Amino acid sequence: MRPIRFNHLVSAFAISSVILCASSCSTPKDVTYFQEMPVQTVTQLDVKSIAIKPNDKLSVIVNSRDPKVANMFNLPFTARTLGQETATNATSQGVSVYTVDAEGNIDFPLLGEVHVEGLTRMEVASLIKGMLIGSDLVKDPVVIVELVNAQASVLGEVNKPGRYAIDRDNMTILDLIGSAGDLTIYGVRDSIRLIRTVDGQQVTYNVDLLSGKDLTSSPAYYIQQDDIVYVEPNPTRIRQSRLNANTVQSTSFWVSLASLG
Image (cartoon, rainbow, N blue to C red):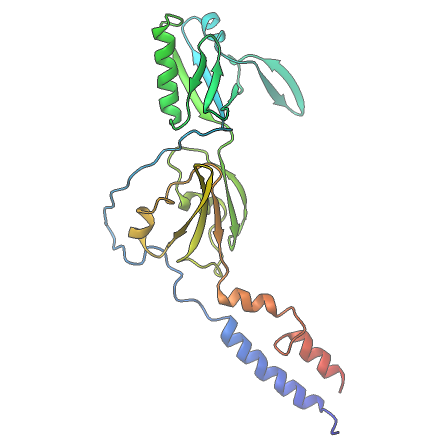
């Protein structure tokens, strides 16, 4: 058996490196968002605000010219400052939290059960305000409702995968991906998956960032609480992940083989 000469191995390694570089370092064609949308295009959007559902946590604060009356409807809360907890009321800075039960209700002081499932936070504020005035409990209420635990997750080929707060109404999938630092160059842009729980069942949507028209008309365009966005790796990234294996394509294989000479 003829010995393997080191210079032959080096030549083979150089050739394989060129082939791998050509295959793995090529830039994908489909990396530009909104390719068919010319400048000054006007798109009509069907805006969808976040609808409240069971297990959501709501901050509901009632203000009035008479603070004593308003405080009757504001839950105590715990203010955290430098690791110390201090019980106080909702007239100071902080959050009063109501948890929506399985039937979609919250138990509001003096009003009792208030059905909030399916409503937006603005609709809940209007509902409670009307109930306070209608029951002659507060003459001039100002009701502020916020979602405390609204979050969505981004996984896969993004620069900062993780769970992010939905910090405003009508947050879009682009806003969420932006919070995650945008897609990496290896992310598949025309088939992003969004997983959403609808009526107790998981529904998966495919989102195409390359098509502005398809994106803005998708039911997945506006983010809902607990959505999961997954960005798949493209073939280049998949090939790169396999280079760590000790195969004929990996650098470690050629280095190991060269050491035999």
